[in-house]
Image 1 (cartoon, rainbow, N blue to C red):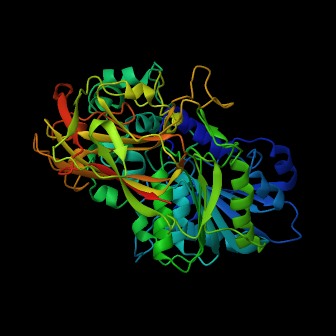
Image 2 (tube, rainbow, N blue to C red):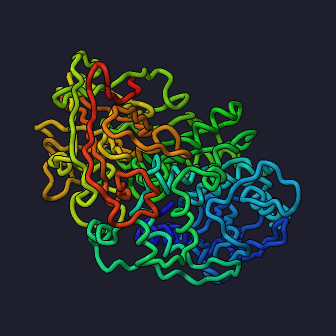
Length: 618
């Protein structure tokens, strides 16, 4: 889900025009647009735009996108500039359907964020996105002339979630679906990462998203939020504690924002919004798509695939992961992110050879030669295919933090209880990017981290220069042994690829960037320490007591090449990507400005208290 003011605006543009206008004349010449209010089983009507080929001499499959970001432009004489997942679909001939989901824009009903799915629907009042999709498909099949009786659904980000819930409709006409960067568990995807609140991504999103909070259909757009500055670091420091978001700005007027503020723990509110628990008995063929550098819904893509593949072993489930930011595969070249080049353009390959091939096979019966798993291996910039993810041949190994800031696959042997320590000051937090920006700058996912290494509140560990390539394939788990003088602390772990001194610039390298010694971020994640044993029942730290803190950094497919080094950085602030921890055991969403305290944190690296990353090595 797009979670900054700028990115939210861009995502709306993506939904309205798909960032492309080249097909506009062709669409008007070859398609007729209709608009319908399709009735649901509880009597509510959902606004639906339908683009039908003018050539009615043959039947066409239906391909649908359900969205909370508007199906605009409204009016049968106003056309989208592009239709479908990519331009190939427009010229191949489909019936394209776009629908405002319940409670959004021109559809009736009251909107719920990531509508809870029901396992049992006893009456017509028991509705969710699955039933809304079923009722929509049923109406389309029965009322649209010359449809082939086959339906596909796709969507990116929030529409990716609606694509996942389309699977739960279990309508027999739904033969293919592609959830792309889907939200799977709202707590874990967009709101909180291991309990740490994703501040900058969420703050600017909700004012721009909230154009209605009632059941009255509208075409009115929201005003958004103007911070009056591009300096997000200073703005959020000046804002103070999280409670000031309402005291100073929102004034308790945004219902969806308040739901996050009122539920910092993983309680029933969030459990109801975890769609993964419902992904069983799926018969529809599925293509799950995500990007290694998706700063918003990486968890959703990876775990939607893993759960579908595990719970539905006889269903065709495909998985595609490329070197993309959130939705980066849908348009554009996908050839770089920030200073880092991925070699050739990866976007066109995905759109033609994976996405179009998938839908064409299941909706039109064309031949398909698509591996179950297609993943892009960063570091060496090549596509790899597997039978499953993670690859069965990947072997678990521990990458240990060692005394002296060293990093090795060999465990520590010293009996001395060695550690590194730093002072964490919430009033001087470590920035997540170098430079000034108000939004969640997506380039942070590959950005050079030398600016962070210079700070005394960032610990650094690195291997010797590698004498051979090392490929990590699968999820990374941080297993830390730590202590703090406070009663709560955040732990941020970053895995970096350190380039050799001989590295040279590529055509995407920034003007003032030196690639020699570049510390490229490969994977990173935060953990709010009080949730180390349970996201539902936080526990304080005992000051000074050595305590295990274990958490997942999620999956990668990356090769650290010979001549490079692997580096791990550990810090306790990452601002304003995540909110600041007061470093006291309390509800941070209700904390006061005076509650923020300095604390001294220690990370241990001894035989008695080893800290390490558990990785999967090919």
